Length: 376
Image (cartoon, one colour):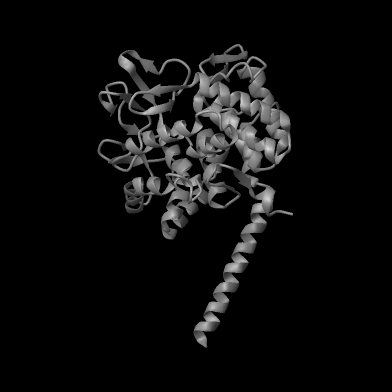
């Protein structure tokens, strides 16, 4: 009889917790508001505070577009999109992929600092547009997403012998003599390729998905991902003097993107298994390291709060509640980074909204914000 009563109260507690979580998920997203207040100008420019020339990157613009969709914030979505188009794409995203970096000089005049596009940012912009089109029933977004996806495929991919169709980090600067290329595993959220495979079935997105999965898995054989890696058909993946095996500010996103994938998405199980040694290291240390080394699996130093936040969803997949609570307490004690450090804030927004189920991503890459399926 006692066990039945205990089960009854456990079920009630679980129901109450889930109901409370759903209410919180349907409330305005406070963390997004904090980010907007501190990092986004009134005309839609995401600013890396404290950086030389107060730079804006296409990366920052692309992430803000995604967060705006998750927050059901169409007004900010349009502001960020318009600024991106006007200042990074010479007024037309359909004819020019956005420049990577924009900044303000000593005369307080703004302009493009690096015109080479960044392919990961372009993917996120196209993906956010495609999801906004469906969720907000806006055909303009759909058309622009399709055009961008086509340009990415045409201008930022290459067929690499032994690896297959692969995403280049940019249209220029990453292909070298003797068929050598420099690649970045964190540039390829696999769920975006899955969604584009569904939306644009006549383009080779499935091939890009498979080549990118191989890149991520084969460069993390010791459990950790590198920031950058070299590749050629004779040597496979390798490192040299200019491209070491260190994993840090780029690689941290590889684990984050993996944790955002649906459990039944292709390669999710393989990725979790591959990163298990890194998870064990974090469990042993009680924090996320700043640097890892792909060839040995070793790590060093203590990562910033954003790194610790970024690994929360992956730690949750492994069920380490005590470490999750410890990291959450650190994040609650020091919230100053959410007002001053752009990149840490981005990692935190991605991870906490994933962990708190403010959105989900299906196996085919479809974004499902909580506001679109469960909120009144």
